[in-house]
Image 1 (cartoon, rainbow, N blue to C red):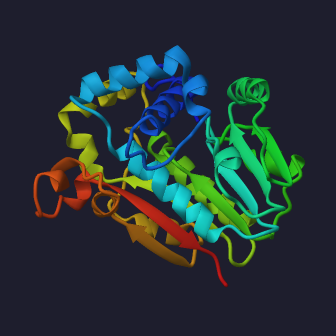
Image 2 (image 1 turned 30 degrees about the vertical axis):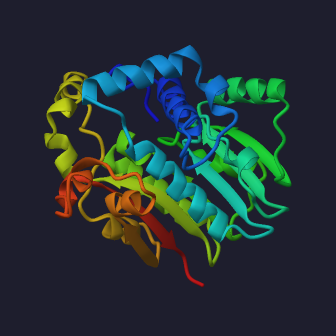
Length: 282
């Protein structure tokens, strides 16, 4: 993930998302509970969350819905002896807070300094994972990250669950395609990948314009978006793709957001993000 001035550093983004998980965990009707999120987020995360919501004009309900979708999908799909790989792991704590099968080998790929600080905090908290192995992997997803993953003990060709939560938006289209294809190349039959993908209409939102202008000034392309998430995964080699509409899931979770919260009309698909679950073979 590039850390150019045109986007928040990886650490700021990770702390922001942790702060959102912490706030959700404090609600009386919380969709999930993350006991580590508040300490991991720290003041940096809380400030980032407040700033983002001042810019957008309100609470970002999407983040909790996305987190629950990934939680539920991982719990439903994980089997003993799987590998789980988090692409752009940030301050994710699923290895510690979810009821996962035993003997899972867990890998988290992200910036080395961010991962090292996360490990220090979790150690101080006495956090314990039920995974057979859990390995931070310091690597740039714009580079040869597959080699770093293999060096960390990952075995290519096994059944693997890949998580790309809140990641693809920050990458160029070329890197997105390369990351999805590399995950597919390293996977065995029955593997799957979970991702969220923004629709192109998000680039038209007024609150996005300062960010888009900043990227342009630094010679960077706009954040990744597509209105064909199924095709995106299929072109990378994934053979079975299911697309979920977050606004519908939000209603089922009792936490509607955006235009869906105002009434029964269907939101413009291009203005939405999409959740994708793609499989490989059997």
